[in-house]
Length: 169
Ligand code: MG
Image (cartoon, rainbow, N blue to C red; front, side, top):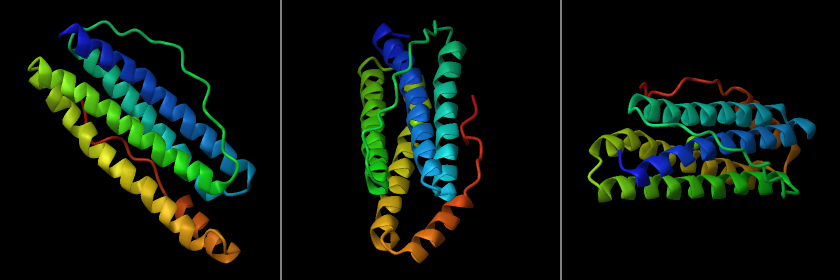
């Protein structure tokens, strides 16, 4: 594997663990606000991000590449209302999409077709992540200001259950 691609894949392990940390902070925020459904939704999101990190970790090991684990940054918690959190979630997913695209471009540059194939799953996953984040914002815009509707939205999000990623290495 070319070093440029190796470095980017290794750094993505850290970015995905940071994502898990960020969503854990979101879950923590909503738990403190009494919105258990939102807290559940972000807790599961955090689990998914940890899975993503482990997929990059596993892929590098499978390719006989050295894995270097770096320090995970403190989660950004510069939000002051529910909507701020949801919008920070969307902005973060857009950022992660740009990271995946950068790795894909680097792999394409050096004709690393195996890495491109591995990343295909993440390209699709990022589309879903952005859709989910957008949907949450739309629902909050529509229902967030009415306590009864917010209660029902919270109930809806409480129903989310964890499922392991469809990509198996
Ligand atoms: Mg992710």
